[in-house]
Image 1: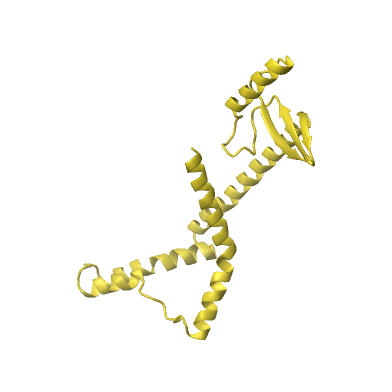
Image 2: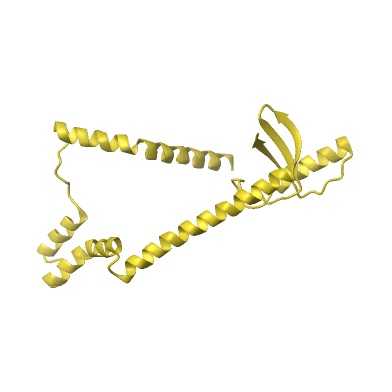
Length: 179
């Protein structure tokens, strides 16, 4: 699993770097076009290939149907952007609904995290970082999803049971929080 995690982490870093560098790449491409290093003429597109195939007789459609087929993407984009059709309202509703679900889910996780921090015990303080222990297993900020890391908690439990004589349940979470 270590290799897979490293690959995912590197891909994530690459994606973040591409997002951060994209405005500079666009500005550079625009500057190169103004200086004449890159031509401003668009290259060959898929629609050009389809028109060439139609003119060679490889596509058997009437001219009006073929033109309607080529303009379909532009028409749908216009209908969605202008909200002139039911499709635009469906897309807008989906976007607003998804945004609301994300906001509600993040708010619930934040409140649960605040409750978990309030009810946890401080095991150790290192500078401004508290290493805390709680009996709750649902950790909303854990990268592996919801639910506690049971193997890690059981190791900590058995270690504390044998060294300190403490009797804590095996379902627990250990996490760090900033002060």
